[in-house]
Every structure is written in C-alpha cells, then in structure tokens.
Amino acid sequence: MAGEIEFTRNYSDLSTDNGFQFEFFCDRCGNGYRTEFDTFGLSAATNVLDSASGLLGGVFGRAADVTQRAKSAAWEKASDKAFRKAAEQIRPRFVQCPRCSAWMCRDHCWNEKKGLCKQCAPDLGVEMAAAQASRSVEEVWAHAKMAEEDKHLTEADWREGITASCPKCGAPQATNAKFCPQCGADLKAVRHCSQCGARLQPGAKFCSGCGAPVS
Image (cartoon, rainbow, N blue to C red; front, side, top):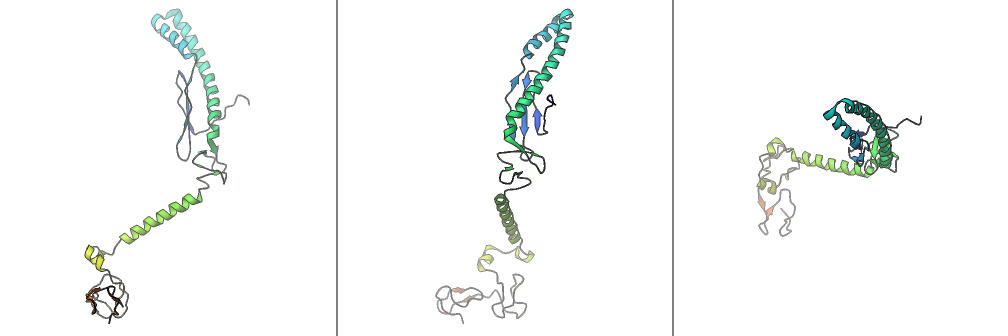
C-alpha cells in the first residue's frame, strides 16, 4: 500500500512537540548517524493558543481544544513524513545483511567483497592478526608460570643459567636441581677455563673467552 511506512529496529525517535529528529545506529558497533532537527511549523501557533486558553478560558479554551486536536493530527502526519525523509537520507549509510538480517554501517561493519556483514564474514586479515596477538599473549603467560621451586630464583640465578641436562651423563633435568638425580653430579659447580681463567658455562665444550677446548 502507498501509505505504508517501512521501518527498522535500529533507530531512536528523538522528536519533540517542536520538531522531528531521528538517530540510526549500527547493530554491530553501535555507532550511527543523527538527522538534523526538522522544525514542526504549527508548534509556534498552537503554543500561543495554549497560553491563551490557560489565561482566559471560555471560548479560547474551547478553541484551543479544537486546535490541539488538529495539531495532534497534523503532528502525526508530519512525523510520518519526517521519518520517511530521514530513512531515505540515512539508507545509503547502512546495509541489511542477507544472512543475519542485522543492519550494519557500511563504513566499518560491512564486508563489501563477501556481500555480508563482518559478523557473518569477518575480514580474514584482521582475524589472523587478532589470533596471532592472542597466541603471543598466551605464550607470554605460559612462560611466566614458573614451577613452584623456581619462584625464589634471583636475577643472579637467571644470569647464571638453569641447566637443562646434566653435563656429565646427559640426563634431562625436569627442575632447577643442584645435583643430577641420575648420576649425582654437581650441576651448580663453577668451572673456569684452564687457559684464560674465564668462567665456563655448564656443558660448554669450548671456552667463550679464548676458544680453548674444555677438558
């Protein structure tokens, strides 16, 4: 029918007795657009009659009642017209997704290549970047969760290094142990190069100071 008005659920009516204004927003990001205030032409005249009825009553009061009813009908008609105008003005800014039927802003929440909203068809590049960032955060937290026996380590302990395997028998070390549980070797023993006296790292085959082989 010609008198039907198409409407959506993603708008707010900010109209008053003095005019009409509407706000349309995106179902995904919540941002949107507000139309300019459209002044209602009869409001000034009816306000004068409303004031007169309050002061004088009588004939002016009955006239104001009639005018108020006329104003109400005129306001409703003007409101419909203003809404049609606002909807047509804002329509190019929004797209209705054919999959989820949500109204999305074209600038930020619409995937033009897929013909769907970004809620149904996200940008793969953005999702991959987000996934990589999330994985990096997970790895940071995983590395930060030290074993209970390692929480007392000082900076000097970290600089000295934690032995992953016994330099004598090669057995893997599950914890930051002082002695190898397999052969009993002292894992914290400090050795020095016989040639230059530099401190040797656990398990080193050559001196990091002079390159001499470790015997």
